[in-house]
Amino acid sequence: MKATLEEIHSLASGELKGAEAARIREAIKDCSESQAELKWAEAVRQCLKEKGAMHEAPECLARAKDQIRAIDARTKTESFVGRFSWAFVAAVFVFIFAGVMVSRITGRSELGQASMASLFTGLQVAPGAETQPDLTLERLFGRVPFNLFSGFRPAEVAYGSISGHSCVRVSGADSSGQLVVFAVKGVESVGGFEPAGKEYSVGLVNGAQAVSWQAGDVTIILVGERSAESLIAAAEDFRR
Image 1 (cartoon, rainbow, N blue to C red):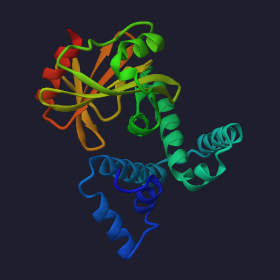
Image 2 (image 1 turned 135 degrees about the horizontal axis):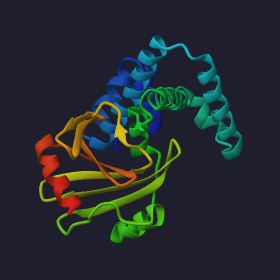
Image 3 (image 1 turned 45 degrees about the horizontal axis):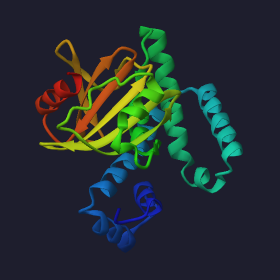
């Protein structure tokens, strides 16, 4: 990463101006990791602006703030939460509100875009787990919900819980380029995704193409810089 997380988030929030902002943008222009982090931070900020203007839910917001205070007290990360409180409030508020509304209307659990963004940054990397990622999957889900076929080369494995759902992220590549595979337990759909046939749904995650499908009670999401058709073809290999 060509710039620190603090610099990237300061750029996204508008704290950096003029020459300083230009310096950071120039430093990260060729770094895909830094660009992805900047897009995520800008997307969360924009989501907060749009959703905050459209919805009035003071009780929900108060509950979200109470949860953040509880996290702060347990982990003693006052400085981090204080600097990025808007991002935490946005993620928790949007997820709680969207989850309640979807559950009331459809009875289905949906993974919102704010939670999807957290899958890239909010999971714990497990050093060395890329050599046997199936062990991490079995530990969290009791089984391996997708096929780690020989053409896919894992480079990093991360795990944790996002919005109360157990999650695993496996980053790697196949013969066509970089891919990231997510497994999320307890959700049935991804916000903003549209059906593509009987088995798949397609959409965008942080500006990249993505495809999702169900494996029992686990939703699998495949993200890569390629067409939806190419991702679906890759998904077929993960499902064999």
